[in-house]
Image (tube, rainbow, N blue to C red; front, side, top):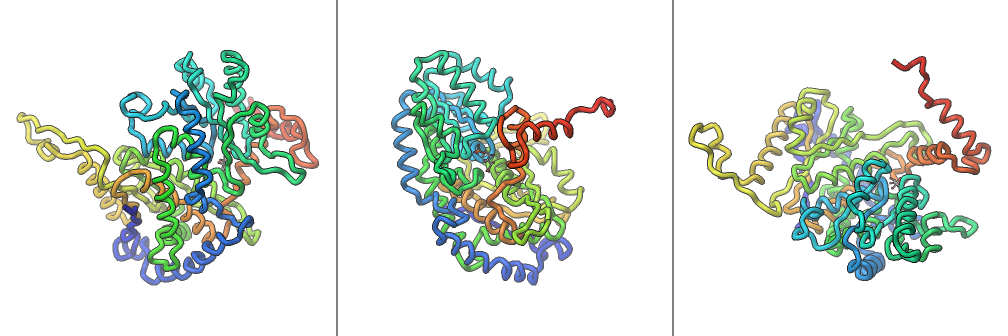
Length: 483
Ligand code: PA5
């Protein structure tokens, strides 16, 4: 069962030459992208210098074994699993859960085969207090999976400090190791010191640990222990997930452009970006795929939003990813999408068979207005809504792609993840930028450290204190401008 990318509706034959891709342009982008397929395939052979180690995750049996062993060890004493993480250390977990477990998983014990799962990717005190009030004595059957590749992200580290104190306060002193699983980077600096503060804490308290593989950026880690542990705990078939990703990995390695869905997807996205369509809307017509749009949004934004290209030129490049949900956002966004600026590429996610079906009843006799909706399947309505929106957009010459799923299951979701990760690598190569770093995110993290009073040096010639003063002088609310 393979997902497919349908791209006819971006072509000039469908939406005209002004906005669509002509056959000559298609040949041009194919010629430009083809060598990148070979380049990306060769990248994998570079050993420790390889920039795409994320592509080895689907076949890494060692990670899978460590995750499965830990799940077997802890599942019997866990009714509630909490993930603490942010960005790439949370969005994949959320996306897998929404995609592959029932909507009422957390509420209905009959609909779940693992613990209730809560992923907190923020430090909002009201949100966390409400959770802890609900949890109450359930703390002693709760596991906190603290995920941070760097092991020093302020939001995640402070969440750890909250639960560490709570556990020490309410449970026996050596209970930390039964309640916290640390997922973090294991690498060391040039002097051999652990880079991750989380790992130092984990080693000290003898917490079980899982590794975030070296060289894999947060947003590419969902198929590592980062995403796999919570997925496996909650009954998701991680073997099928990884097998699906491996299946797609073979397809996106194909050195024939027209058979390579990631190369085509990246080339089309690149083409439209360079012709003024700088926004990329992803619109699943399936609730289960809703949070995959969030995952994609981070992947696309952090990977491709870059100021400097690989030749050191200032380029300030990057398509803006926008998430929408069909049919919901037909009633909130499509007015803009059709009549606003023609500056977007649309990618629909369409599903043929939903896991369940619901039929409407007969229409009341007092009117014939609803006869057309009587005794129909809701999946038929939802898929027709997708076609209707796509048709309406095409009428206004807006380019549309569709990723087609026969079904949403672990195997097809694994394919989707791999497809979009490798698309991102191709897009990075087309834009001539490094899609694997996130320097702009790092500055914000350091600035937060400084404002929170971290001691020491921010940069060689600048202490955190100086840095904090500079930040405050630029961001204090000036009453002269307060209305
Ligand atoms: O993709 C990324 O690298 C980021 O979004 C990180 O995942 C995010 O900033 C969290 O970092 P960490 O896992 O180091 O706490």
